[in-house]
Image (cartoon, rainbow over all chains, first blue to last red; front, side, top):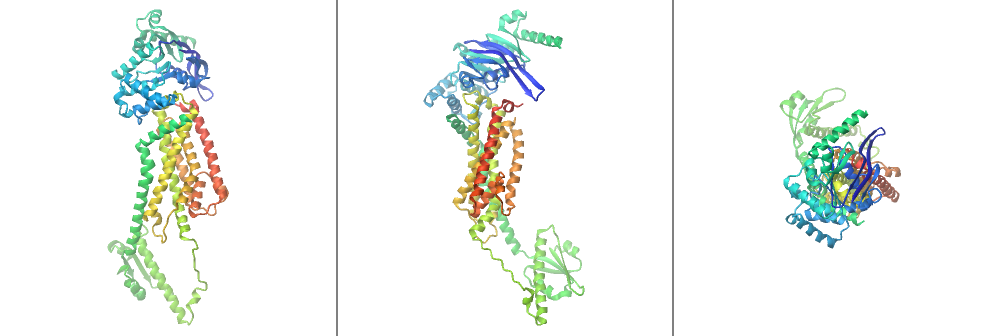
Amino acid sequence: MIETENLTKIFRKGEKNEVIAVNNASFTVNDGEVFGLLGPNGAGKTTTLRMISTILRPTSGTAIVEGYNVTKEPDMVRKSIGFLTGQTKLYDRLTTRETLFYFGRLYNIPEEEIKGRIEEIASMLELNDALNSRVSTLSDGMKQKLSIGRAIIHTPKALVLDEPLTGLDILARRSVNEFIKYSKEQGKSVLFSTHVMSEAEEMCDRVAIIYKGKILDMGKKEELKEKYGKTTLEETFIELMRREDEESRSDS
Amino acid sequence: MKKVGLIVRKELLDAVRDTRTFLLVVVTPLVLYPVLFVTMGYFMQTEKTKEEKAIYKVGIINPAFDLSLFTLIKKSSKFEVITGNEAILMFEKEKVKAVLEIMDSEPEEKIVIHYDGADKESQNAMKRISKIVSEYNESLVKNRISEYGLSTKILEPIVIEKKNIAPAKRMGGFMLGTLIPYLLIIISFSGAMHTALDITAGEKERKTIETLLVTNVKREEIVMGKMLSIFSISILTTASGLVGLVATLYSGFSFLTVGETFSVSIPWFSCILMLIVMLPLLWFFSSLLMTIGSASRTMKEAGTYGSYLSFFVIILAVFSVLRLTSPGWSLFFIPVLNTAVLQQQILIGEFSRLNSIITIVSSIIYALIVFSIAKTCFEKEEILFRS
């Protein structure tokens, strides 16, 4: 389970110039649930996910991942999550096997155990033929499969996926979609960020709409659509943004 | 420490497979520099031989004013002599390399040597003529003194004889010390630079840094792992550089030894000592480069800062080429220069314990200071995720 409470991140550039990237974000991702964080570019999705995965430190508020506090127990949080992004970010000069071995060892998996785990992941993601190939020689789809393998090598209980489908071709998208469904079936909490509404429509059980760092609303997809009288999630999303902009204008 | 070791292993494997690292760490110091030095030595030697064998065409104006001098030059096998009236014309039409103009001015005879200062051969011809004229001048004075019944010894009341008491080994060390430490420092710095920037700024640019940061590894372990990787690569580059330079010297063709009458070599003990005194400097370089790489957003930005830094390193190292007179202990507090001067003293075989201690301890202190800055850069998200 992932829980955030009033999670806030302020970036300061000098004394007077500050940007509130995430403003009091509170939400819960239950076990066996795919939770979508929807928002346009620059809405604060990546910053929220970076705070949850301990890459960034929150300015205020808390996030608890599988019972561990991101500020107080970052090591345990990192051990509990699998982090994946859309763009494949792997070491080009390592082979598939070396990549999985390296990350497995970084997660303290014993050497004897890790070999079996590599075989298991390679079978599951159909990476057997690519085990001895260097990452630089792999297709985008294979790279994404390897990224998935890298993210789950330590069998994490929660998954944090930052726009995992961005820039992927149809085959690679399919791999990620299947992986998300599989993780859900395994009872993992999946936090998923995207700015593509069709992805959220297809994948998520519940969604939160984030805009200018603020969570505008959240709930089940159908409930949200009904609440705002819209037929699609995209229309709901645009309506919420419009209301927020109007409110800001009237406030100022 | 287990994870630090894992990171070092991975970074070294990555570096070994990187063609650019291989070129900078192995090919450049072991092949490129030796080939360059041997080629330079070959050309310098060829030039020297060519100059010794060359016969220069020279012109003489008014030979009748001093037939003895004219005959002396004409008889020399080193010149092809022609006569004429106008120096510039002789340069343009006859393609002479120098013109000797004898002027009939009383009471002393005056001689003008015309030459082209922008032409090496013309300069050489001028030097040859000057030498003949000086010897001729000297013989004239001696003859005149003898005519007065005096001894020619009155021209040299004191005879100066210079005796170099330095043994060949020490002389060789002195000569090598002029360039070897400088070259070694430059080779080491450039070898470490690529790896350092690649595994810091490069990793940020490729966004693999996030992948590493979300694993179960502490940031200080990542910093230490990366630092040890850069340090290992810099040691490897220095060792290759030293082997390359020594091999070039033993080949006997290096430009460093052209024209020397004694053999020039570096004892292995000196090589090891030179490598040992380099270690704190290499840690210092690794820390500096890691700081730059961690604070930069892209490889391009890091490369720009790295170029500025290498400029300072070259300036500091180049002071050692000037061969400072009796360097005092305070000089050994100056980073980079202290190591270069200490290596010069090692090559001569005379280094004081105090200077060695100051160099090593001060370099370690500088390295630790810069390392703590590098650590801070890596741990501060404002710097690490600067956009």
